[in-house]
Every structure is written in C-alpha cells, then in structure tokens.
Length: 516
Image (cartoon, rainbow, N blue to C red; front, side, top):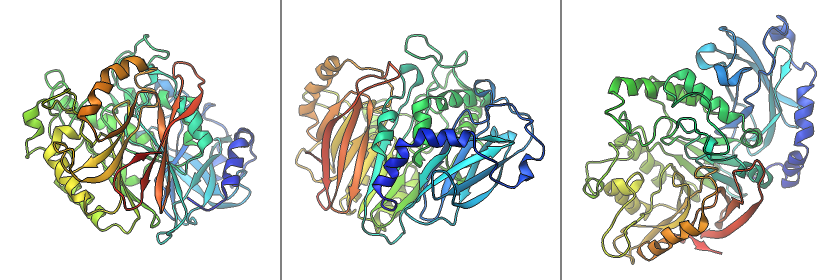
C-alpha cells in the first residue's frame, strides 16, 4: 500500500527497539479513570504482545491479551479490567487520533479486540495499550487504500504452519526486514500435538489440548515466540485456520478419529478451540464463536488493486475423503453451498484488478503416482474434485484469479487448469502454496527431491517445488505480481540466514505463473 513513504516505514523498523523501550517507560497518557485503583494487578500483563488485523480503508482491529502467567491460565483475577488504548500517526504517539477504554473480560481470557474506525486510508498508524501503569509495546499497523484507489502497490507476506516443536519461527525475522503491508496467515497457527522432546522446543502441557484452558495455554506459548511477536507488532494480519487449531484432519463436526472422540465430546472440543482461537487473533466481533461455529470466511478490499477472499475449508466440508471414488463423488463439498455462492458472487462482481483467494489447502492437482493412473492428495482440493473443477471453470471468466494456500509444508507453485487429466487444457489462474514457517523442521533436501522430482512429469502444471522453510512475498501492482520465495537455512536454531530461493511473476491478463 502506498501512503507514508517506504523510507519512513523502514526507518520505523530500524528504530523499533527504541520505540518499544520508550513504550515500556512511557508517561501516563490518558486521563486517570482507569488508573484510580492503583497498580493492583500482577506485573507482566502484556507478555503475549500486541497485534492488529483485518485492515479497512477507515479502520483496523487492535488486539492484546492480559496474561501475567501465560502458560497457566493467564494469571488474571476473575474480574473485568479496563484497558486504555490509543492510536496515532507517529511512532511515539505524540499525535494521537483515536483513544478509548476497552474491557478485558475473564470470559474471553482478558483479551481485547478494539475495532477502531474513523482512520484515514492507506496510512501507517502506531498504537499501544495501558493498564494500571503498565504500558504495552508500541505497534505499527496500516489501513487499506481508499475503495476507489486504482494505483499504488501492495506487499503481502504469505505464511502458514508454525509448529513450536519443529523449530523456531525464524522466517518472521526476515519477514520483518522485508516490511510487508499485510501478513496473510492461512492456517495451522498452533499444533494440537502432544509434547515431545524430539525437536528443539517442547509443547507445554501433558497431552493434546481438549479444554478451553488447555487451548489457551497452547496459544499463549506460541505468542511468546519473539519473532512471531515482533511481526505481529509491525504489520496487520489477516488470518484463517486449518485443522491443527482443533484436531488433525477434522471436517465439519467429524474428528480424525470418531471412534475415540464421540460426537458430543468433539463438539465440546470445537467449542473450546474456536473460543481460544478468537481470543488470540486480531479479528472483528463478527468472529465471536457461537458454540461450535465461528464465522471466518470474509472479504477484504485493497482499493481497486486487489480483492482478498478468505475461505474456510474446514467447517463446511464433507467428511475427510480417503479414496479415489470419494474424490470424484459429486455430492461432496469443500465449501458448502452458502460459502461457495458467496465466493463466486464476490469473484464475478469484483471491481479489482487482482482477485485473490486465501485457501487453507492446495487447489492444483497433486498426482502422487508416477506413470499411468492417478493417486491424489485427498486432504486438499484433490479430495473434492467435482467442486474444485467447477470452480476452476468459473475462474476462466474471472479477472486475474490467484490462489494463496498453505498446509503442505512445501513450496508448490502451479498453474491452475480446467482439466488436469488433459495437459493441454486451459490455464485459468495461478496458485502459490507457501511453505511452512517451521513445520517439518530442517528437511532433508536430497531426500525430498529424490521423492518428488520423479513426479514432475505427471504434474506438468507445477512451476516450482521445494522443501525449505520460509514464506512467500508478493509485490502486487496493476501490471503484475512479482513473487519471491524467501527461505531460511535453519529453524532448529533461534537465528537463521535468509535468502531468495526463486522469483516468479504473474502478468496482468495472462493466466498462470512463470519463473523469472
């Protein structure tokens, strides 16, 4: 997004440490209504950091959660706590433009989601929170462009799959340096797996989370990663979930292992997981869960440059597919009828140059069987092919569709085609499946290529596959999207060296993607 100059934005990054330090010792900056009771709360209220998300031309969501004892339920008293907030136009907040008091409630783990409105479009802002003399770090965020803005650019970072036990979240340190306008996170923010000492870090707790407090503790642990916290504090995020925020390979209200998780027990688990998810991500009140349901699919506009359609490929899908016959069953759905209609309406009616679809799982085909025949990756859109193929036929009439996905722990960049059984079928779009932040750890590259390179002949639509950890970075302009695959050399150490593995481009009006 274009507003404050790139120089100004990057200058904030280099001054970030000083700004955070200044916030920690800041003078009292709001009238004393909320501080009249004195410093009665424990120290370390802002141990889980701050975040912002879902930018609008005139608004942004500001988030924090008060948790002085984050891995043991939070450590807060069972009462409502006033939280002062302010947002301004400079890093030291000498020019505040909005301020107020939110209420951190125990029923939401003392999290706050401030939906600030009345801001100016396409502009950087800084924000912070204060409770009884304790001041949060200062964060930076950004609003979306004016709805009719046609020019300018948008830098988007695509991330997914951050497994605490598999490694440190070192790609975020490089992402911070690349200074994206917005971070798109497409699933597996936490992993529900049991604690293990096999990797560089160990999950808290004694087993998988099932209760609300257990999910809260797991999210709190993830928020303590310093690179993740720094990235949350420096750009707005747009998030959605996949399976591991609840249970591996769940679909609708069906768990991975129905014999071990009766329906009522799994509904209770869904309810707890969705509540904890809402409590730990910067989303609007429209996402407050209603029992075992949360409204997650939504649409965000970035002027006339890009429309972002964020999908939910878990709550409405038919039961997990496990066979080739099921994969070709026309009665099975990934999106459900209502979400599918919403998506198609939004794509066909879009005024934007680029129509982005955030899909938790891969849309392009993966044929795992060398030579004759097909063996598909059923957890992805391959498992729901009739609906997928019908959607890709619609893409032929959509302006510049680009799908941004995760889940695979691999970089898999592909052309989207109307018929994968016919190599000559029409190319209708491009897909970028981002690699993981840390899931699968430091993968053996030679073993990966020995396994996957023989499959390239059966998947000619693949333009790039790779198994390094990292993220994708997109510079979106009216004439095209320039993509970089950013990777790190390790996630098993707390520091890493980053580099650009590959550059690719999607041209305006030319479906598909090409290496540069």
